[in-house]
Length: 147
Image 1 (cartoon, rainbow, N blue to C red):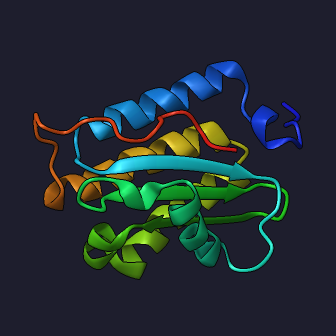
Image 2: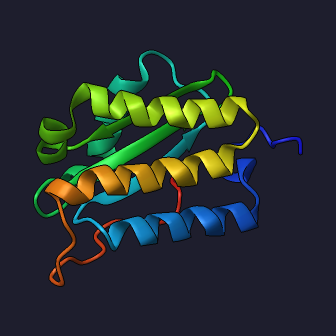
């Protein structure tokens, strides 16, 4: 299937529903809030772009500073996974890199939706050990991909 080169149209409606469901399922395992961001291009370093997006998408406003962003820049083949303060201190650069490598591999294999959903699941597994879901957790950020 040829992918559209517009971020909002990169995933079809069925794939978007799968991604939303993956985020919802992940957030039932962890107190973290997961945001998927899709961009056409990422000028510069994708990790630095994630740091910018933490602020502009209000990910830093989550209770406990437990927001995570998965950034995919499809035209220039860049990706990054990065978390707000509380999470970044626990997961660290190596943990983010492993999830990002898994994501990139799936994109290269032509299975972007599967790769993204699997990366979200892996992220939830990593986060649940240190940031488990509790009944007090509320959904603080949208589960739909951001464009």
